[in-house]
Image (cartoon, rainbow, N blue to C red; front, side, top):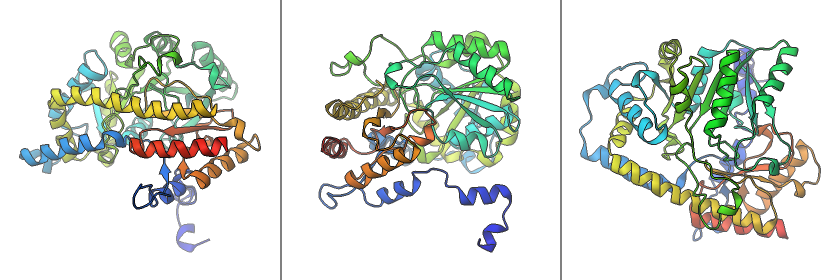
Length: 437
């Protein structure tokens, strides 16, 4: 072992030897070989990282206009409040109140950190002790393991609520009896069920939690003094389920319900909400995440720990300026929904033609699909081999199923917003040829 690496701490050594994502190496390879119909027709399609490229040009134009037409305020170059500049917190609170949460939001209940990962890490550090357990319904975002575990020391417990995706529908399947089972299991192991974490719309399935579900789960958590956190990072990335090509996938009409409404009604110290502008507003590189909580001690603790994770002042200023333009925000949300629905339809159209089951998404940037019938071996190894084989033969890089911790093998995530629509069509044609060949 290299002397420099061996001189690290145990934490540092583990970080040096274990990649943050198992698909990162292939992602970098694919990103250096992007498909272009003119200059690189045999190129690759990295559909594994959650970015919304469909609306990037709109956001870029708006932010560029703000920079060109407005003088930067003096406070941008100075230190500011550790939870975020008060003026920007007020703008963000108003945005959440009108567009995301649809209920009163006090700016004093909000704190900013540099991206979703940072807000997850810092708030979990405040809420949990090392070795406490965060329960997450499977399948779930792979990077929760690192965001919650590397520094706060939390243990991830993947709650299995179903086996086949056909058992799900487009509404989340989590119920209080599922939580009872996890509670009993962890108690038998002598472990502390500290946090219930859900994402709505979900990553990777795109399903929603109804207001009734959120209230039931919140009541369960409050009664047991378990913190419940809902990540609403895809809260404005919704699919048009009334589209004539999609409506047959949905048995019931389900509207998006923000957890903030339950928080507002309950006024509990155990209920919290995460949000970030990276997905809904196609600005993952600006690193702007936030927590909303009525727990005053949590907000105070976050501020005191937040110094290494502050959102840069210029980012706060420019996002705050964007949010002031309500005409733009309303127009953007409408158009973004149209674009998401178009790319989503393209992907599920290809899956229908190849007989690949999928979860009907109501939101997010994803399609969660079951490729298990193509496995040569029903194991983690077989799943990885299929994932690599699809990439090597088509150039289409999916998100591998392993990190999502679902019990069934052969399920992969497709990020339908990761490349332009015309390029996505080529990618899906290659997928169809591969699967039907």
